[in-house]
Length: 125
Length: 397
Image (cartoon, rainbow over all chains, first blue to last red; front, side, top):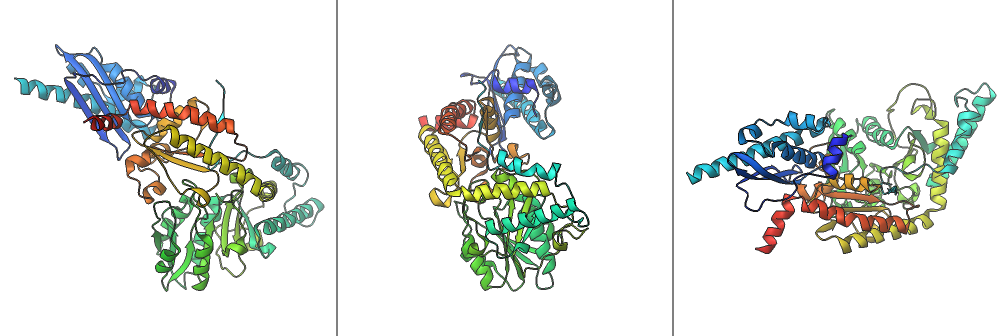
């Protein structure tokens, strides 16, 4: 059902956890649907220095969170915004059709975190 | 680590060696078509079929041999019971009563009939999944022609008050069907003692083969065909009889009935040890379904707060444990199990459900292994869960 890459990211998820003084936090999904992703970022000089996640959800939700955080780590904010759910899926060697929404959620979680970062930046100015 | 523990006996069971042995001759020697009576191998098949039917009738407590109809699955038996009776009685009425926690075979057939002019009442259940006989009686209308309530629920193990409901149906002269697919081999089943008009079962749930089921239809109940064609099953169900499958079903039924008390005691013991172990070791969990005698002897169902069921299944699988879940992801739909929602669980709790169903061959070692492996899995997933994080922060406030 799942590719080896998905299984690897599920069994050994990268970047799980919280960042204490994160300057960007994204939260998407809802418990009713069975998927919630929370992304923490530490953005310095427009670069995502560190990123962590916490996810409530199925195997695909955990694997896409792990992969998406891997893909944006060390990138600029603009580069991270270009991340698509398709790219996350491809990096995982595909997902079953009924799990595509998990990759969409991962893309949205990254965007939500960056939006939060920009909002905080504007508030500071 | 090659340990393998099968904890999904409510989904299916292993085929017993004795059952397979009973089936083989019907593939190799007595391969004739039971409808071809003009030569020896056909007659042998016909006679074998009669004897098997006779045995099945006896094992189920049916009054007559001709009340036993073999089908290709429990699903077919359920579909036939619902659609066949609804159609046969439609001049009398078009109302059906069932419950919200039936198997999808019943619910799907009822939803189909609703599209074709029938009216269906889906009864609520209490927090343990019990259908109230009073609610059944209250739902009866002048145009009610069929009541169908399962004997025992496949997800949370609730044993329903079938005898009481059968009496109500009888009093109102309404046909009563019960889906006993999960009950056979797990509790005593005698159709006359229960007082049911129809009963469905499926061989693979009690160590028989897949692809064969049975519908008991009491004489006097009118039923339309679901499958049209030849004159098999006294003209009621076309298709060349699956004699090997039927032989497997009857053998498995015989073994299940003969060893019932012993097997139930074993399964109940393992079930209760699992429940106790999980409750002792894992905080913030909820046992779904009833406790004790009202619960199917082999079923355990828990919800673990702040985690999702499919993730639990995947991690258990990594440890060689086979189980199932009522989460939306595990079922491939958007909503979690209709049964868990019917007993009043909020969606997020229903998503975190895990069903462990033991078998007569489950050992204490298997149970201990699950109790050892499961708590760190739940903890690991909770440590990853933003819901748990919120919960802990709330606790520390």
